[in-house]
Length: 275
Picture 1 (cartoon, helix red, strand yellow):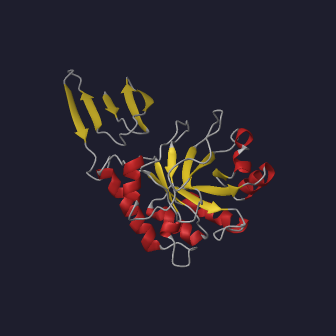
Picture 2 (cartoon, one colour):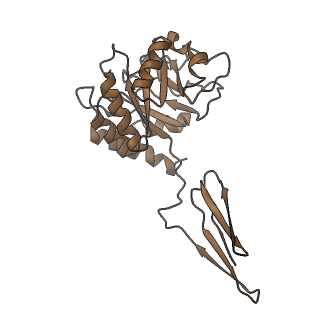
């Protein structure tokens, strides 16, 4: 008789009893891989056990915030970002932005993001429900990010069948200038940005107080972040994720710079030893 048990984030345990095999699943949040324990029983009822330990590179609990890289304008930049470790790839579908993308390009960005295990986020500003749903479907978006009062007002309808990033804006002093929804909806993320999203301008982190909100994944901090200040910002406010756009741009302010992407990720990853 052999009994094997492994407990992990999404692992399985198998028991063999009298020639029959039974499998069960166990979940343990925050511990990616625990040792595999095997016990063997011989016919004389003597037992022996062995433990298989993961290597030092495995099973390490990562404690840094997740990263959203926004204002992605090409499949090439999406690949750079996702390969570097960004889990959310944002593209702007608002024509008035200098970083806006056409639907054909947005669809390709979505494809590349998904191929590297990231999720595609479409940014909408004061669009109507029909437009948002049509574009989200044609571009294969996984999340819809809502800016502007008109778009945010659509949350009751959109949240029923779509994954939502709800944007809150703070002024330069760190005071919110708009509010969370008055009712509770099924929202994936709240995102706190400066008053002028995508401008590279931040706000006063010391004065900011995150309101009490409920969402599936927590909240993202945006607004003027770059490799040299993201650690300070994340340490001060302890968001669940950080959102960067201008801080990883090339000098043209549109395309992304692979070196800046790498530098930003190194800074974020260094937070795991500080938290």
